[in-house]
Amino acid sequence: MSADLEKPVAGGGLLDRRLFLKKGLSFSVAALTVDSASAADWQQARSPWMNEPGEPFSNYGRPSSHERKTIRWVMANSMAPGNGVSWTPLHDLEGMMTPNGLHFERHHNGVPKIDPKQHHLLIHGLVDNALVFSVDALLRYPMTSFLGFIECGGNSNAGWREQPIQTQAGYFHGMASCSEWTGVPLSILLDEAKTKSGAQWVIAEGADASVMNVSIPLDKILDDCLIALYQNGERIRPENGYPLRLIVPGWEGVTHVKWLRRLRLTDKPVMARNETAKYTELLPSGKARQFSFVMEAKSLITNPSFGHQLAQPGLYQISGLAWSGRGKIVKVEVSADGGETWAEAALQEPVLAKCFTRFRIPWRWRGGMAVLKSRATDETGYLQPERETLIEQRGRHGYFHYNAVVSWAVSETGEISHVYR
Image 1 (cartoon, helix red, strand yellow):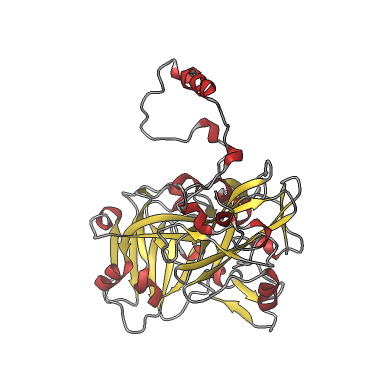
Image 2 (cartoon, rainbow, N blue to C red):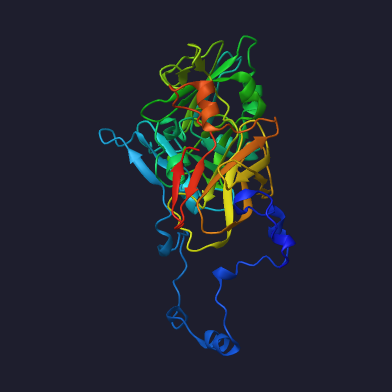
């Protein structure tokens, strides 16, 4: 490969993102070089599993036993095990879609065991026609699919701490996952119910033991929300809302009410716990920030990140995820020198609105100290802020909607830690 092909585009060894599209990009340190005789030996060698029949068919596939470390990490309340969260292991995944069994969870009182034959959706309040739908009835309606992320408003909240938390990327930022959600557009159902002129809000309520409810503006409901029955092609799993889940594209996870049982149209919000005691934050001005629905642009390098080890100097791929609740990601920049210089990463197609976008860029690590970070820009022009900027804007009373740039420090021995830089 020519020297020009590997000419850095930014400090710290970052290389042109287009190198991934060129022939001759060599990751030679990752492969063994063998002569003809050794190649013949490799060809003739038979591994033990080649000498006996394999496993029979199964009714439902499961991961390899060698991949048992790729799991959701659960943190439940010891006094109330049904109240807690599980994180998606973003640091162990690739691409943009999250497997159903690894999608993050947030429950307030456990996962209800719902019989779909006895479950119904009620639409009432400021409508001319109050309607009750069985699950079977909803399955007969025309459906649409939305490929997009759901992110808990409390995701990444450890970033507000004075000292950086040291844990894997997914177990810090993994209350965010991305799926294909398929179901009935709510605009169709509300057209049948015939909304009254005074209706401005929809109160969505779940069928779990906590009877979780939240207020959503009617305009958003009519714009792009749907009642999802399928996730990634199969019926939604119980921990993610079976048999019905409300999908509110680009908005905080609390609005995506699981086990949906009721939609009540009103002229004002219900002012439930999750929009008063929670999801309301004091700003430096003394005013409170409330109904901050949209998840702003965010990016995260998932590999390499905390818990990964760089074995030796050489060429590596920096890979991560970016997303925005306001639309498409148009650019992700990566720095290997703590933000002194930046290089644009390659975005994996398709790049979709309100969806995870995978980014990649080649990096030649020379064995010295480095600080890796990424920042995303969405189609509205919004640029992901540095931590200092976010704190200046929002103060130090924050808990929700943390979307600051994340920095990973690489030591001379290849160990990686989370730093504020």
